[in-house]
Image (cartoon, rainbow, N blue to C red; front, side):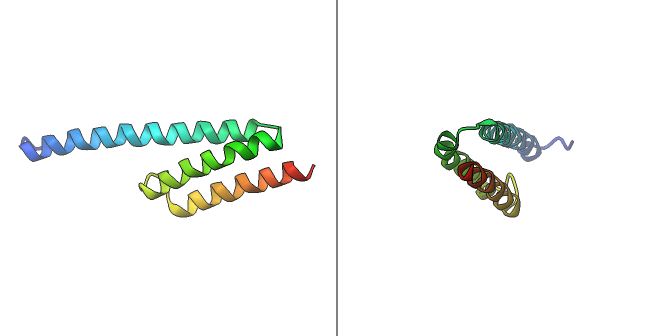
Length: 86
């Protein structure tokens, strides 16, 4: 690592961003896991909006790709719709 003020600052900034991104990503993955574990369609429908919002925020901030966000939301909606049919 270069011994310059700007480089040291950049290292600090990148470290903060990485921690924030890891926290947001892990929180969203846990929410998706919890949503998939729900067996009641009404309860799942209530939580779907919150999870979709979290996924959209990850995509907006560049933590995940927009296509991955779309695939996740689609898969969750398909699961919810299949649950509602039963």
